[in-house]
Image (cartoon, rainbow, N blue to C red; front, top):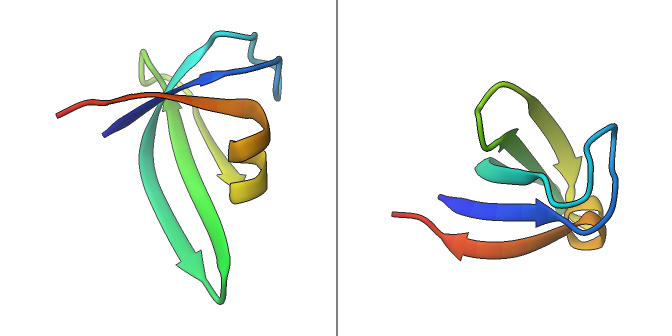
Length: 62
């Protein structure tokens, strides 16, 4: 599992909020990512461009 953090506020979440990457899929070249907050209470689904623009990869969790 991968851990990401927000670079800047996004969809009501504050800068620095940590998210786990739960799932990723690709359909006809369009990638979609599902992330959950670190406390696992909220879920968001975003595109690859939103992931690159708003999130920073922190570490891989085993």
